[in-house]
Length: 242
Image (cartoon, rainbow, N blue to C red):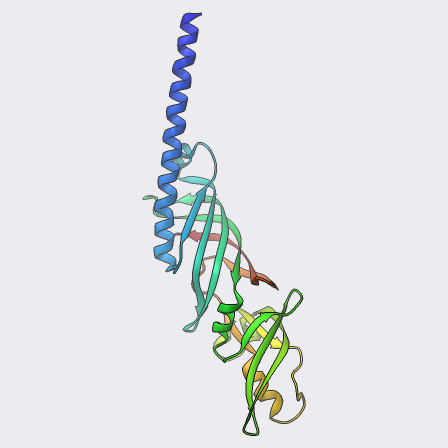
């Protein structure tokens, strides 16, 4: 009995040491990976990484991780020199194959969400308009001032925000996925010169490709009081620039 009790005590102590070492290792790996992701993505804010699965050490030795969750704050995404700030991006990477030096990896699949605040969407419009929630999902309130017959005229319109293929856009917005904001109707619609003047202030398109983890694509969007929410999915998605 004494010998059995001794064996059990040793097993518990060794088990505790292993768990402690495993948790220290996963914490170290999370911090290092967060640093690499932040440096590669050029994140203005913070990067947080959460590695799932136990034990971590056996996953690391096999260079395969079950799931890695990533939270980025202050992501500058865009294309053609135009940037749109994503307040926060949350993504889950599944079946991650680590590279030889553990500096990154590639996930078989990933999904996530991103948020564009109305403050950042207003900045992205680059036309002097102010954007707020439009009262229902997919709707925005856009307020702008235009010059009509030499007099400033401030009006608000309800616009629809959609995600379209770049080929449906125009000019520099062609290609990739494009966030489009377009007024449902405008004051003076149909009057020559008035509608176009207002729409120059209220309507715009922004492509969002650069700045996202490679392989992660926009698939849907909606809006609420917090801002515009993007849905992202992808396969063979790069983690930390691998």
